Length: 182
Image 1 (cartoon, rainbow, N blue to C red):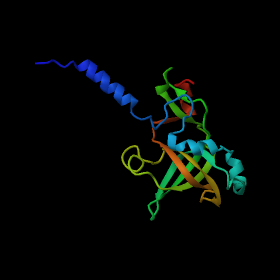
Image 2 (cartoon, one colour):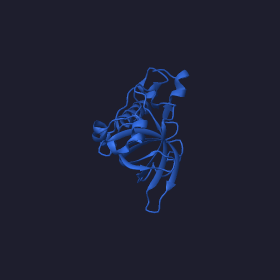
Image 3 (tube, rainbow, N blue to C red):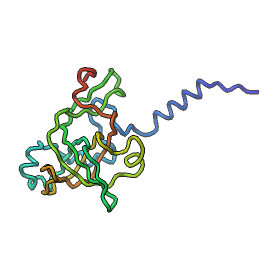
Image 4 (tube, rainbow, N blue to C red):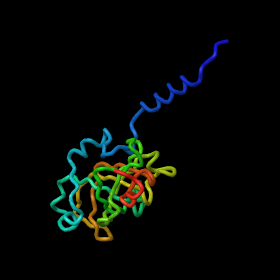
């Protein structure tokens, strides 16, 4: 009878698993757009929140790329969701717990720049079901344009072309600086 050695087989399976697909949460020192996000990311700017609130019409044709922490998810009759968010400026160099990039997490400011809202159709699966679904305290990166309307809190309403989602625990804000390094 031939004997199968488990160690080489386990190593091969581990290497295969590491090579399959990228991490959707972007564990890197700097922000890395997903393949399907690249076009939006290349066109987007991150204008100051106050500029968009003051004059949303000047951003009607510009692609805005904002990060927002979800404050409320409201299900709509047509299957979309209204997300009420607090805009958080992105921190270019992400916080990491070790020298290894796999310990780095997308990092946003702890400072809430102000409220804004978007209406999106969530992608079925992980974004709509289970513990990692889009919910309060999720982080969302939206690419869209100012519609010219304001939400019930006085924040701008953005029309979204693309969004990316990080569940709670898969991103950091700057309050973690004492425990993490850049």
